[in-house]
Image 1 (cartoon, helix red, strand yellow):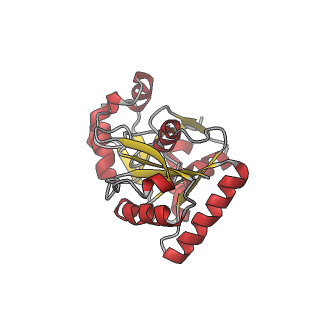
Image 2: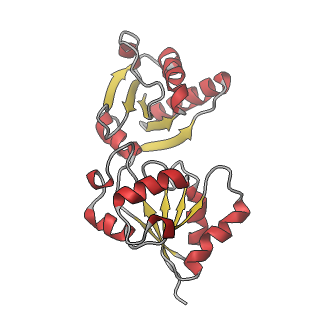
Length: 236
């Protein structure tokens, strides 16, 4: 039996129709699929209903993969591929396997020699970098910084030093309800000349993407980032 293909399916970055940000060719790949691995079944069904599926939603097989999934459960999630079914992997927003538990399933599929196909769609990280005006030729994504203040300050100083040494744009994110605390920490502790980008609600109606020096941010009203998906970028 020929194994199936694991399709990495991007989803919108917020409440918008898939047709507004996914190419027709991507939607055409999604619609015949019957097996999906998703972060949350409820929100995945909303996306799949909007994208359109050839089978009724209740006929689709949706298996969850999130931060609570045990690593030994990955084999079961991969089994439909070995049984010959194509499988779609979905994140909650943006591209799967980027700051996303789906990366573990992709790693296992690659280790087993299975075909993995990334599909075109929105990536908040690349969109933020494109609009930032910072260095797009040398950059690094660090995911979530430490939550404890002393550990976070050390991480910020290390990242700023690395940025200065390599002229490297540093990209990171935070849990939305801690965005404002992170921004205030950045503004208070980074070098005044360091450029800082705050990119919020990317691709959504309330989108704001602004780059200023830390010194200029200190003289500017706080951005409305609380409980809104935000990407932070800096270049020393």
